[in-house]
Image (cartoon, rainbow, N blue to C red; front, side, top):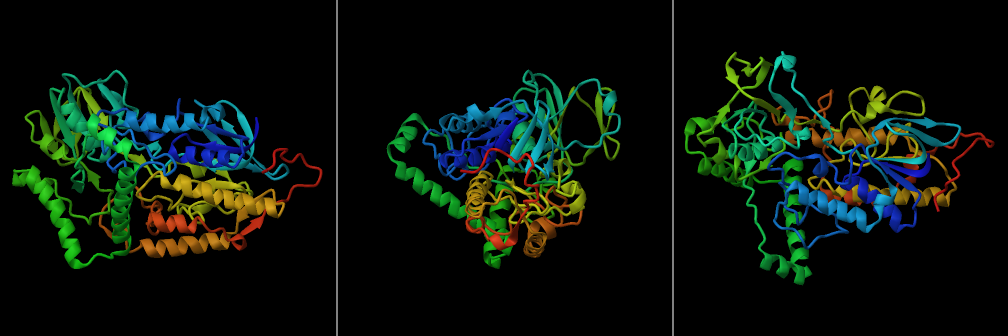
Length: 497
């Protein structure tokens, strides 16, 4: 199958490039996804209690601000329905190939295109847009005796449709963002819930607001309410991001912020021994803080028990902790998170035939988080150091940047363009220097954001506003043509128009 543009991923950051192409009249594109519908993480996340912990006023697409949210922090089905609605509005279903998993990609020098192998077909595309998400590849703990366990065991990211937990004794491994949402829901129906915590998390108040029908109608009738609320929330989150990366808070502001977190814990946890187990020893921001009002109170319910150590082994009907303690359980839920960015770079070959992962040797990098040297006509949405607090923003910013590149290529009759290695290395050097002072690197914890060399591979080196500014400027001198096909070769017929 031939196409001018191939987008890999059907979440928000795959939707935005497709929408931007549509708006330009560039309709020769396909969207491939291993999922069965649009929605990304909100489509696949089916665990009980799954909601966004970022205020939805800020956590939505700027070109599709909704007036129909039922709460300030909507549940996964509502978030997925929102994204499917955007896809329908822009007729993206006509371009989508569902249940089609990306397996590998290699650049064909003679044809100036990418050959993409999937579980369903082979695609040849002039431009490859990777939007597979930050947290797409599940992370499993290394448990001895996993095959021995006779009960149910599954990752929170693959929650069985038929499982409610009713009447079960359940082990929840991990107190990550998903873990703290799952436990309060399981407590309502389970006989017993054991929560196994290796490292405590910084938990902040959620302050979730549910909108009455009257309030929803008021918001629909006055768009200025939505605009003001969105602006306010973005301003707050931008300040938090700036403070975390650049340490721009005064000592008094730091003390005030920490007092809020400690007060939240002290207010909700009366037992000083339990409170001590729940108090992190690392800096705020070293791990992604989670917002919840339900987790702490749930831990104090009669049928819930916090175990402040990890599980290392499974027996037929039990889990065994690092200290050797054994707990009889019916079900094991692994709320153990994800590998940041997945293994996508190991499945893409550069022009020299070497995979990007092999070439970069554990030090992930991409110029402006978007372009990879040796990979012509490739755009990486949410790539190395491409994450900001609003996970939907990169798709919009990268899509805008992509159009700038396409305009330049059309103007200069270039069919293939790649970033030069020197700007890519310099960008990563400066990024590493900026982030070397941030809590993710110096905070004293183990997190999924650090690469094999100990550098932050996830965070954008600044605010969302700075990402917008950087990706609003295309420096052509940092790129070079990669048009090496012979004049008689079978070049792509589809051209950018």
